[in-house]
Length: 285
Image (cartoon, rainbow, N blue to C red; front, side, top):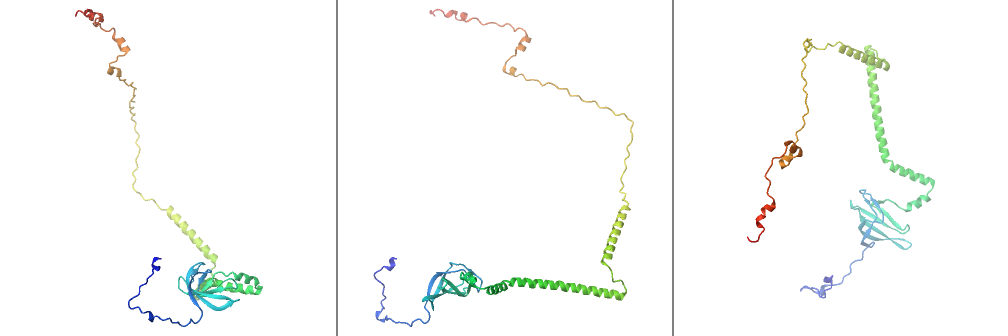
């Protein structure tokens, strides 16, 4: 903001203020047009590409003041562009219904004043309207009907071709003198009888089929009169486990061992302590 608060401006050296003159251009002919920023007042569908434009989408629009008025209320027209194909869409204000009216370039998805018109229409008008809407919605149904009719015609033509070929075959057989009138039941019985004969022949073939000799050797068991030798049965006796003498390793002797050893040998007993201290009683030494 500080750059707009300068007190001095730059003037070039060749600036001549006398050359600046105030001129008035021609007045704008036609309605007054100005550029405004607005939001779409209703949801619509573009008629050029089918794009849906939701309510509240922002546009840079041209606002035009029209000559139309409703009770001295000016009606404005707005021009916007489709967001997908840039097609021009036009709508104007509708003071009578306190809403907007879409003119061209798009189709409004919902118009609230239609409900009031529906309540006012008669039964005949309602039937006519329903028939028109039904005809518009039945485009897909009509296409499905055409496809179904085409499939039916193809089936009929195939049946006719089959009938023609069968008639030609019958006529050719009549000329040759062979039997042509054969019932379907006779054909089924003959086919069933043929299948049974084939099954019986296969069963007989498998029964009469001899197995090939693969040269197996027959081993005959020879009878022996030798008395079987009885082998001695080994008997394992349980041997108690010897216990280790841990006391001998530590120099300890058990009482049982001492008793078995007898009286211990006599050893020289040490003199009593009084005899060892006999010479140390006097203080003369």
